[in-house]
Image (tube, rainbow, N blue to C red; front, top):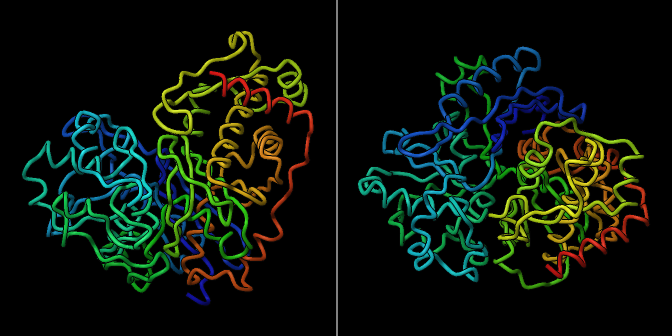
Length: 465
């Protein structure tokens, strides 16, 4: 959309729901409102509070629009979720929390019918991290559900549907370990038919397609003009990747951080992915397969710091390196490259100061991230997006472990907002403001050779255990 100044971005994360405003002329995110993504317990299963999300989104759009008149809206959301709609457009079932363990009850049966990794590039994951596993469990638990379902929507596109009434699916969310997409043939996988969803999948649209304009009741609720265009939307980690695909030459890798830390390898070395270590073949906004790996780094950080004050001074960081204070994987053992392992410290963690603990945790997270990059054949510079881009200990250790330059993008409070906003410009950076912003706001991390010895020792210990 040429001439747009303010882009409204709905960012539905696993931990928080955000509505951001990106000023496309000033080259920055200018405002954001946030609410917690609270999971509702109880029947029929733990699920996302989509009604509360919608109320927040409409209220946030109204308030933000009063300060920054919004010209267009884009959407981004976490993966591992899909939405089942009735013929009237209502939810056929609540949107299941993908950390609900119910699907594990049918794990062996689902394993027998799901497509091979060679077809989908999607590893078998625990809980509901494979959307196909969610659907299989839901249909078994509620035998009438599949007949009530008229349409399946990927999660970002559900919110675009709420705004416009237009139903669509999109490849970056379909390719996010759902088991529902074949990234090599660029079509739905055989699982769609197996689950009884043939003919019920919404049309696949491009992430940068304009789906339509606001429905009249949404315009009234939000105060935005009814002519406000809404774009199809994109998986959140792929939103972080998109600006770099448009402005950089391969090889490079992007590390998107948040509840999940996801490593994307662009133009790296050819390497066989190991589905047993949480590697996967993601799909970018253009439909291209991208070798990737992930772990719940943000969740692990929250568990490890446990509301302690975050941050450290140089003395704390140096002490952790000099005394070889180390944490070994895995804090969240149900995902990531070290699944099934039990986390352990090589010191008495209770004796650590908050600063020492913070530095050691940052080192641990960086070393797991480096492992993921190795597993995907990553090459060239590493660009870190999201909250970990503010963590100097993490950045320094990642560079030392990977032995490649690490760069950061610190301009956005939400690492996905800029990429989602790019969809409004047709998915083109061109000579526009966003390309200039990406080029000028990237800062290199200084090398600290002493950290490489620490990284080597950590790896040797991990390999032995």
